Image (cartoon, rainbow, N blue to C red; front, side, top):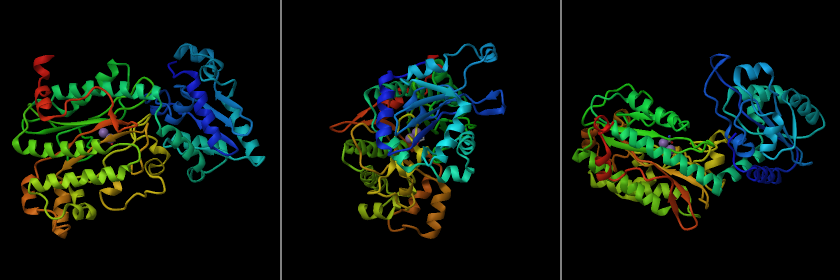
Length: 469
Ligand code: GLY
Ligand code: MN
Ligand code: MN
């Protein structure tokens, strides 16, 4: 059992209980999820909030925190001889509880009765939203609710408390995020070396899985490995690379304690950018540099996003693809034709950190609200930054033929977009670049070993797979 120090978990639970006013807090761990039969399951991944407060990385556990009495109980199943025979010996439930600084344990079969009795006595049971179907069903049974009501009755005060705690990364968490980002470096170097004519996208995808598996880790999300980077989350992976293509790889790894990295690089197959690719790439680089320069506590990430978009428009103007007043173009959302997504998101135990608790609960704060404008509505993080936040910066430029055709037919933002020139870019694809940053007292710090980013660094690392292995 690898965990943080016991004091970390005790402190986190104390802080949680202080922020939730009264009642019981139910933290449900994940169970094994079947792949095609009950004994054939997907690789286990623990619930991230359960990991944060309870650290135990095994299926079938739950924790109940009594806000009023301070009592904490770990629920689980004691291992039987059959489990030992098939799965090997496990620490006892008591050992697990000690590991995270809890005194009391109980069989998971007791949980329902205890919760029903508490509800009957008028006590509130706070619980978090969950994206897992098994957990929704389990919560329905434990609380006597329909699935619809399970979703509806989640505790907003618990969500807010969890988000406030998990948003600020402590020293030990930052060390984990660094190791995740360092493995991200290995992933991207492996992918760059394979960016040669004749290689299939799935071969690179397989190598990414292998790099993580050889390090005893997991990937933090299904990688995007594509020569059609204009599709933002392209998971097809069935194309064969050809010289002249741009290969977009968006992938990340987990640390041992399941903290995530999330990096994107876009490289020329064969190792040399064409002049046109280099021009567009340079624009994305300047956008990224501007965003990074602005990150500091107190600035709203919405404002970083908008400032980055202004640099994007200036760059697209220099290529002859946009024109007109830069501020007006950004205010109108004209640039979203080229970058129809936000600048980044929080990163932590989840790649889109805490988003199963509600995207707006994590990325917005009531003072800054999510826009409904095309493109800006995809900004996952808009709120004011604080020291200790960890986030991604991931600008891109994409040429999406169907989107361009539609906007052109509608004459949309025709005063800002040079549709005639754009017709030359239908075969371009897309470029995205992405790095992970910690917000520090003065500004920001890149996490992990820097992955080649500048044009010369990329060209020197790309396309050497067959000669170097
Ligand atoms: N990996 C998906 C993203 O960059 O948000
Ligand atoms: Mn990414
Ligand atoms: Mn990302």
